Image (cartoon, rainbow, N blue to C red; front, top):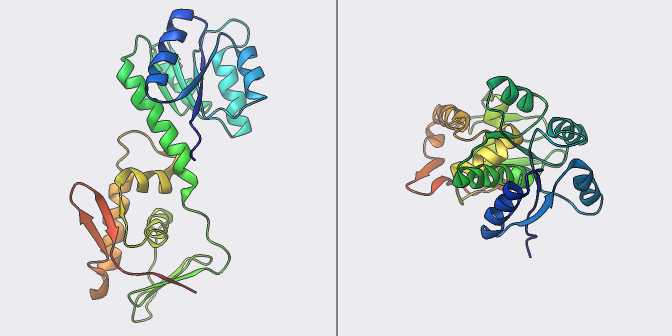
Length: 239
């Protein structure tokens, strides 16, 4: 059974803290209210927190300091929520590792949408498992050696792929003949670097399709499924 994500709300204003907890619990998340960083640390020592929603201005240690610590540990994603709306505060928060930033007063639906986006990216980013050494994929006469990244067409010709194109192709090869949404592909190829409305995946997809279409057998390998996403049409064999 999938574990319900645990979200910590680190906010010294009791009304805002209660409001955010209520909003998230209505969406099916488990929340823990934290009036200060010390309380957050006590909870984090006992339980795994899936998302920290941090206010910048807190009594004692502030939100930016906690964000910096969390990023150094490389685990808990962070959404900064603060009354400070200046660009410099937003930039500082993002530069020290916040996954997203939302100024007060905020629209409750936007807070929920941003929290969901962060959880989706960070929880699914590891869904494409790194291939074991010398894993080789064969499909429709093509061959991809995942370890060396050597990619050859059915005539034995080498095909050069950028890092983004390789990651995207690997996502398709590890999930062949399944409809994959744009968000899934974005999560698997961009992970924590992905931002809302990121168009990078569209560019990479267009380039990968052009690479494949240079050989007649590759033109129809990636199909667009209207209203659903994209499907890699060929069966894939591992060697």
